[in-house]
Image (tube, rainbow, N blue to C red; front, side, top):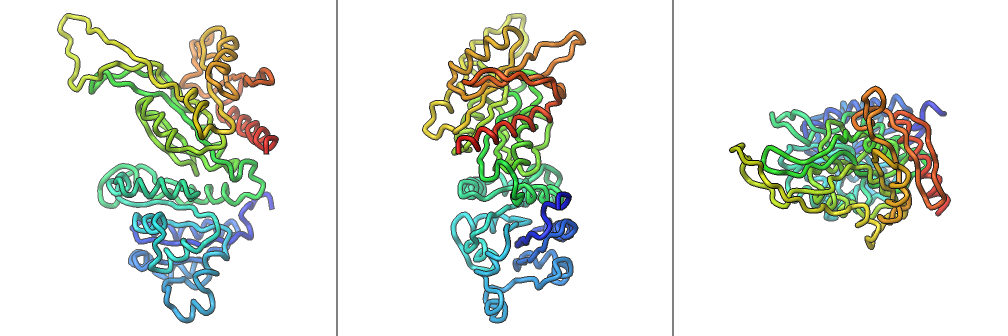
Length: 406
């Protein structure tokens, strides 16, 4: 049924131990509204926050807790439990559950089911900001991502411990959206790994000043969201912007061009890369540790060239099958775009004119865009659209290209 893409689907929900476990009850309810049958595993720590009775009342099924239950193992063993659903969702995904899955540990029903499953896994992390940023959790996150585990969140916000930052579990409707992306049978980019860059980079002069540009990140964020909605496993490497990551997109925030290149390297392999970020061409040769003081003399700032991320990916051993760059120009748009595609080694260049119109409005920071798709086959002139519409059209065009190459 068109209005209920999840109707008839079966999901195994693993509820970890954390204050965000209460959101799992809302998640089950929201999935039930869409015709989804949920079966739940509740960890021992999770049962400290929600009860088997409340969870079972919403799933309409027994809540599974004990790996060594003779009754459950005889009737619904951990192997069958882990494979009877189309998708396994871990919400909240604690640092402990992530560590166990990343390292192949299995000492309870939840970790054993995760190790035994042959189905896709979606994790919604929830933990203290310091835990999320710790080197061990970051290593486990990267390992799980390489293994094909999908992530939704965590979001920024105030936590129960009183700290603020990334660590809040994604909201139930965000998780539902990610589930719809993963389970949509007709998703044109299902199984495709996508890398998108967005926003500006900031190159520090001193602790309070930097070189940057006017990029808002809106077009790149819209593209990442459109690719995710089309079913792609999407990583968004973003410079500093005032935007939230689209649902179902893995966000890797960076500041400088060198950090962006390192994050892109870490996100490989990818089937398609859309390099929409406005990367600073130069950076100060020396970034001072103290604020430059005004003393009557004009400071001399020597600039050095930043890495060319697009050209680097074009020569990379894990080069994406479809590599797309952007050319934001103020004059001779098509000539520069054609030359850039050849010089950088990109498959496509998305060219646009970012100079102000007669009303003084610029594409950078605005909500509309008019682009030209430059490829080996020629130039496609697209009409002016909203940036969201450009993103949807580009995602559809990417799907056709990759399908034709398959």
